[in-house]
Amino acid sequence: MEKQTYFWGTGRRKSAVAQVRLTPGDGAIIINGVVYEERFPRLEHRQAILQPLLVTENVGKYNAMVKVAGGGISGQSDAICHGIARALVRADENLKPILRQNGLLTRDSRVKERKKAGLKRARKAPQYTKR
Image (tube, rainbow, N blue to C red; front, side):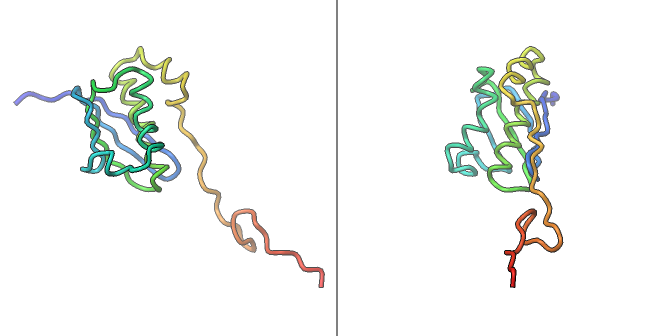
């Protein structure tokens, strides 16, 4: 049995982490054992997942096996996008400038701010009463 080659990348967004494996194939994207159309019904999330492949014109050239955990749907779809972009750079170093130009290799570091003591949320204070 021959060893199958694949390219991997880890993507992160908010509290979601996606481990992506790209193998040469027909373009199937499987996320946690489910086809990505079923896992992400909203069009915006599907477009985010496919964006690195569309930008580099690699749609239909790679199969993606993804394990994603943590966060919500938006965070997970953006983490998968980040992971696919990183895996594409491992597959072909010449794609790095195109992906960098479109902002797909930069990790979006915005996370939810923690709640502070005495406040209702991170920054919302209770209503001030004079009397």
